[in-house]
Structures are given as structure tokens and as C-alpha cells.
Length: 447
Ligand code: S3P
Image (cartoon, rainbow, N blue to C red; front, side):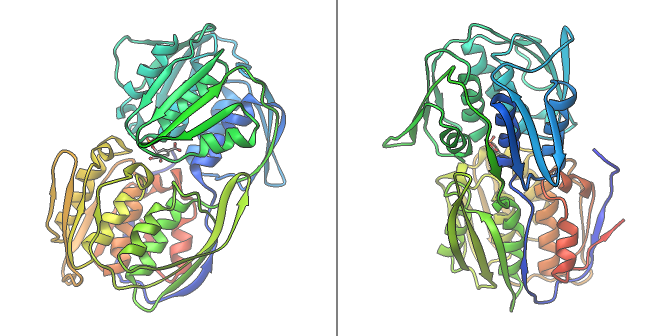
């Protein structure tokens, strides 16, 4: 992580009307690099997100696992040598996984079938996050983790050369968990089955289809059944990463909450498992349109147009896996919308880059918005008008980019004098966020 810094916002943003582009999607960028390392031949990736999480993935693959990756004319070129082809020289390979749960967990899937020992360590935030969701399914296929029964990073993983195809039940609604099982299944003989009880983003499945892997996804009454046949070689590919809808969410919220404003964002990933928050917002009266829908690299992509809107309260209890990264900004929208908003079954938010339930509550407490949190639920008593005069707020969440950006949107939409510490963490997912806010007319100062 680079130098730490805070930002200050002291004024409400003026109305704006702009067309913008935002950086590439984080989930697809990490998967593109990881898959390319397992394919045979030279893969080329355009518009890769150059955020810290993705660059940590690129650098660890290059420096710790011996994958040749070059950047030429802004295109990432990855020289893949097939499954289990990491070039390791040491008895135990040390791998830095930074702040990225996605990189760390998907990588564990690949390493679980790679003979060798790998010591994985993350930053302060990632080292606190749950890894039993990784160790449990991977121990089942034959990998070992040391120290035994440790629940978080740092951990040493020892891969097996005799992985067992298993039936897994994924009931958290976590794309990382089903993704890491699919990563392990690639070089596992036989059919690995995942019963996905709660839907989450499906980029791993779509990517594998694009690569002609032997994968079948069958709809069930509740969720999906995924069958993946292992040990079928995959070959190099060309891939274009579209813009990140979870990053777009912050700017969409700012537009909705700033009267007289309009924003167009081009080339946004419009995968149904990622833009569910737009459906939810439309239901509460948000003026949002998606145009020019088309397929790029196996994913739906479109242009999003949003105009400021008078919203109604939110009531969310289902399909949480499809809005997991948008909840912090939806809490801000709920706080600034008159009425009682209810969010149910959102307990897994505690296991993100920070405990997002508690950190969001702390912010709302500071602006005088009543908010009740229980183990799995949150109720927000929103107000359309809040007194901001003579009130200042301080946000000090270490290592959570989405809490930082949600706080910035709150400050810009209301005019609360706000200081947000450790804002550098925004670079893990959305480099250029500050520049974009300035481009819309927002006054945000780095301290
Ligand atoms: C991601 C899955 C989600 C999400 C994260 C990216 C992915 O995590 O929060 O930002 O790319 O698979 P979980 O699967 O743990 O919910």
C-alpha cells in the first residue's frame, strides 16, 4: 500500500450534466489474469483495471509464481503454460495478496491442486478476514492448510496432486467461494459439482464458457447446479474488461441525490448478477436507463444514463449476493431518503474489508440518522433534509475503499464538512475516483 492520506470535503456539489468513463471491472480483471496463467499460449487483456488489488495479482503471479506478464501498448500479455505450471523454486513460496479477498481466495483454489507449499499473507484488513470459507472446501478435495484450524491469513497452503472431485454446497451467496472451487476443479479429474443455493456474480462460469471449458449450469428451484469437468486443457484468449458497475454505483448515487443532475456512463458491465442494484433503485423511483446493450468478451455491456430522482425507502431481503458490494452506498441513499428502509439477511457484510454494518452505522450516527443493526439486519430511518450547519464528521475506517467512497458521496450530496482518513485505500478498486469527482465539479482536497 502506498503513502496514506486523508481527504476533506466541505461543500455540497453543484448540479452537473456529464458523460464519463470509469475504470475496468475488478472481478473480471482478476479472473482474466488468473485464467490466462492457466491457459496454454499467449493471452491478451485490454482495459485491465490498474488498481492495487489487480496489480498485486499481476505482481505476485510474476514475482512469486514465475508467470511471464508484459504490458505492451496498454494491453496485458500473459504467457500461460497450462494447469499447475507455476514456476516455483523455493520449498515454501511466499505470496503477498494485498487487500484483495478475491485474488487471495481464487488463488487458493489454483494452489490447492499445485504440488508445493505456499505462504499467503495479506494487508492489515485482509489478514483479519474469514478464510474458513476457503480451507473447508479445499481440505475436502485434499489440500492442507497450516497452522491447522487457523481461520485467517497468514496461512500456508499445501496443494495436492491427487485432488478429489466432490459435490459442494455453496450457501453463503459468495462468488469467491464458488469461484475458488471452480479454480480447483480445473485440474481435478472427474466432475466437480457445486450446488449454489444463493445466487452471486457469475463471471467465473461465463469466463469458463468463453474458454470452451466443459461446464454446465442448470437452474434449480432455488439457485443453480454447476458441473465442471476437470483436466480439459484451456487455450489462450483475447479479452476486454468492461467498466466496473460497483464503481459506477457511487457516481449513480451522487447523481440521484443531487437535484438537476444527469450522468451518462459508457461501456459498463451489465451482467445481471452485477446490476441488480439498478433494478432495486428503479423500483424506488430512480430515473435510470440502460442503452446499447451488447456482448463483449462473454459479458453484457451497456451505457447507463441516470438523472436525479425523488426516491422512496428501500426494502431488501433477497438476492443479497447480487448487491453485496453496493450495500454501503445503498445505506447512504436510504439515510438521505425520507422513510424507513429495511435491509435483511446482510450478515456477511461483517466479513468484508471492514465490518460494513458497524462502520456504516457509525457514519449514520454522526449525521444524526437513526439506524438499528441486529445480527443480520439493518433498519435506517431516513430523512430528506438534514441540518448540516456547524456539524463536521470524521470517518476513520482503515482499509475499506467502499466505506471511504460512500462517505465521500454522503459529504458531496449533503455538504457535511467531512474528513475521511486512509482514503488511499480507494486505489484498491477505483483509481481516479478523486479526479472524476473533481470533473463533476465536486470539491475534494487531499490532506
Ligand atoms: C467478488 C465477490 C464478492 C465481492 C467482491 C468480489 C468476486 O465477495 O464482495 O468484491 O469477484 O468474486 P464474496 O463472494 O465473498 O461475497
